[in-house]
Length: 129
Image (cartoon, rainbow, N blue to C red):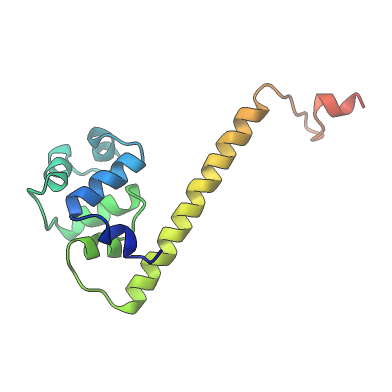
């Protein structure tokens, strides 16, 4: 999957922003709180009333949506060079890896819930063996 694949399957910047926001499990209000972008602006982008948000807004939204600025610029119709595309692909892959790691950490914490690990690093169950 190339850097532009996720963008090419989405027909507009608004749909891309909405899809990524939902994937991040954020409401428009939560995204606004995290980024400092007004909820009304986020809504206007998502429904297509704003198709060319300011560079400031793009820079504020990209990290919260786990996207690169280059990916958002591509969705806005800007042409980018090979270096920018490679960077966008590398960033996307790194963010996907972080998502997997985060899920694994949460899973590990849930499975260890209630297991007491003393400073020695040996669990109470292992100590009795």
